[in-house]
Length: 112
Ligand SMILES: *[C@@H]1O[C@H](CO)[C@@H](O)[C@H](O)[C@H]1NC(C)=O
Image 1 (cartoon, rainbow, N blue to C red):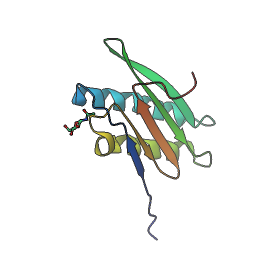
Image 2 (spheres, helix red, strand yellow; image 1 turned 180 degrees about the vertical axis):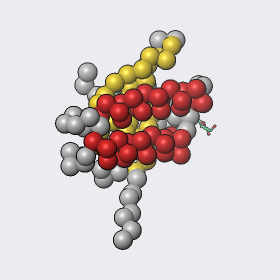
Image 3 (cartoon, rainbow, N blue to C red; image 1 turned 90 degrees about the horizontal axis):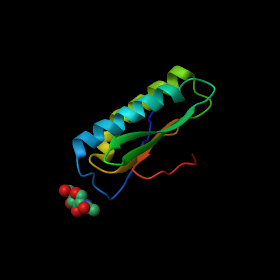
Image 4 (cartoon, rainbow, N blue to C red; image 1 turned 120 degrees about the vertical axis):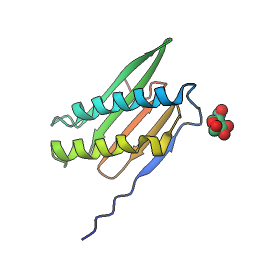
């Protein structure tokens, strides 16, 4: 049986001024959030990373509650790997599947 997973991508119109360094920092934040989100029973983690010059990247990682911790981690890590395909050089982006999603932006989009 082939399980087909659909990903929905969304991204900001705004370009990062330093795309490759910005992307790397966004993925670093998302990888850390993925690790923490996959510790059951949370399945959700938001956070921020200061990147200098008064700028901050906000991120979140979330899994469907029916996933095991390791499936959650795998799902999120896969989406973090897709970030360059989706949102290369953009100031914000989202990767969403049926089981998990990641999001990041330079403005805060979640309640602190
Ligand atoms: C972002 O960069 C792309 C590719 O270089 C360019 O086509 C686009 O106009 C830029 N967008 C903004 C909002 O500056």
